[in-house]
Image 1 (cartoon, rainbow, N blue to C red):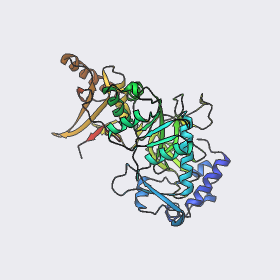
Image 2: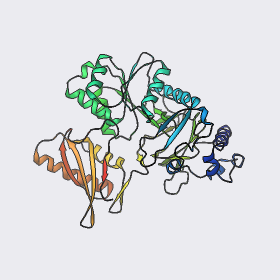
Image 3: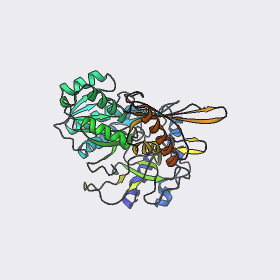
Image 4: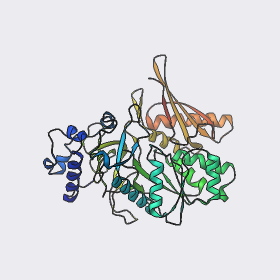
Length: 411
């Protein structure tokens, strides 16, 4: 992302505010905002890592007095010591403004009825979707996750027009609605999907079975939550709200900023956050910057659909595997569904990779041929041969939150 003089001034102001708290005074020891005069100076600043945030537990990230904090949230994906992010009233309000902007970008209006299935509580998702809908003036239906029977009943009775969900739960709902023959009784037109990466085959299934337009919504608890960016109707990447954040794309191994258009890790600096501003925060989300004007006419810059995370790769027999690569392999094989699991074991001194995938085929000979096809395609695209096994449609677990697709049992 370009750094104009105006943007540099915003970054320096955010850095100065961040250093009012103990966390960044220590993190930037010996460095001062006035030292940052160019983009090159900024790129010399140390990154902020999730482990840094864990070490600040519980409220070490505070950059304001505790009396100004009105809410906390905690990352859903954190293991071990949680990451706690404090919010001022301005932070909460700014987040709602960004979220309402996401809804507008997706064509949601005050006449829509927004069915919200992500979780509430310490996780940012549910309340973020709700506050944005309320600010827009739409009717919020704050369901939260689970109880699929009640979800579908309320969806029908209230004639929900917008579904907010993880891709995993959207697929589960789509399958249940199709199975029960209720497609003609729902009124869904759009679905805002976030929280996890999802492949094109899964995307196509959800869109077809629910009959909706799909929008990728982006965010993470450390940077407000979902709602800091979204795709538009042209589905050519996600617009990021750069009046609230500055982003970089870096090489995840070296930390160097990538050249234009190269895939790398997204790094975010907040520009207006008060409670817990973050400077050069490594999200570990992998994407690339998209250039040129978007057909929708919005001037906010775009990043590509996320392909995975720099920390969700696995290495088997010296080969690095990303879930997005598996998506691509399976998407190219017509008879294979979107759902799969990879199970990695270490037996008799060597790694074993098992790939389970769903198919609607029933003929045993056809299934055996399909398994060999999958193994060959996997070998050609990724570089090693798995033990592929086909299972029936719906046999792999469905999730009301995020789906786990890779199980590494070696450690």
